[in-house]
Length: 201
Image (cartoon, rainbow, N blue to C red; front, side, top):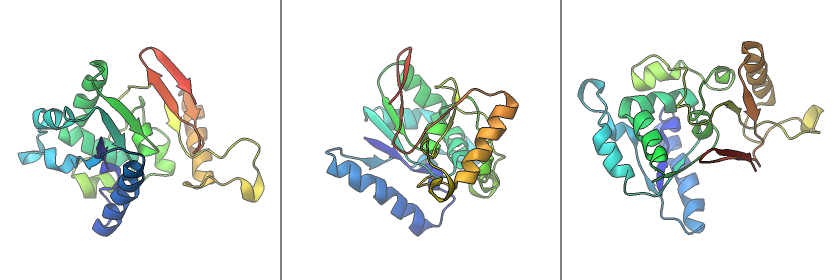
């Protein structure tokens, strides 16, 4: 299993390393053999993507795990490395299973609109040397709002474990006002795409 932690590339080195370990250890306990694929290794001279080398590396895996962090940084690193072309191609060929949470899920949608309520697009320039991109990879046909509080909670309980509930509400409002189709996900839910079927579990 390949693990992509590019959403954490703006973090201090020790925090990023801890983030990778926090994903690799549970995956290992579940019986997987996770290996990090650092997208920064596939950015060539003058920022040209080394997509052929990345595809060769991803061909070694039958599953990809993409962790959360800053969605805009993840999207930019995917563009710089060519992952935004390679991953959808491998999915179309049905040679790779993609699993991602938080930013790792949001980047697969048509748009990152509204996510600036929780993720800072300004981190892209400092981390990646480019302007932020606002389009996702478009593998899923609607926007995703992760870390949504479960229905029925209110007041002090209305807090998602991994995100500020107010930021989540701002994202929902931005998408609604823009007329963009979206789905909310609690931290206990997932969206499964299998061919033409899309299912909430």
